Picture 1 (cartoon, each protein chain N blue to C red):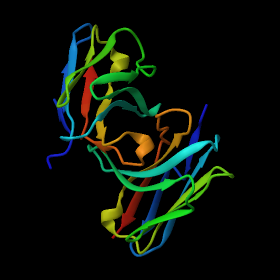
Picture 2 (tube, chains in turn red, purple):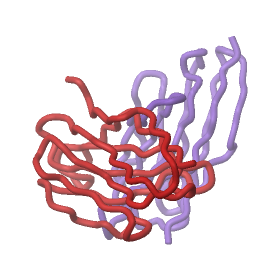
Picture 3 (cartoon, rainbow over the protein chains, first blue to last red):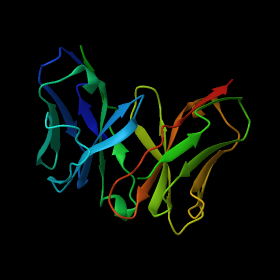
Length: 116
Length: 112
């Protein structure tokens, strides 16, 4: 199993540009999670999907952030326009059956985003 | 609002020692609690998951305990090895929703 695959691994862009982060979950997993990790705030849940449908996006910081899951094998997190305070490591995770099934979440290696 | 505290924030110990990492949480209405490991530049790896009805879970040299009523969990690592060097995060999940709340972790360095 290839695990959760995220791309790109690193992204450096200028303030105001659109940023798109991509995630391929583990095949067969029906839950997908997007997290953001910073030194100050630690790891925070942004949004999660069940069977491609967004369930809870209360962690999305602003309208500049949007996430989609057009099919079971692909999700994107988009920031438009980007700002320096968006600089962080963004993780995607997937799981089988959701958290109430007591199944662990499997994380990708993250995208390190730097907004100049 | 659930708050998760991990103490110490960083720890350096010689190889071979047994050690304990501590986690406390303010809201005891949890469904389960996980301990994760994070290596530099990598994502998180789930080490142990303790259901709220359980007191402990073991995997190899790792043992995690849970005292839900007092809001505490510990991760015990036996016979530490340099390969155990990583950041360890405690993460309780609340009963009321699907969200996992992460602590900021304990950065562990095992000296060879």
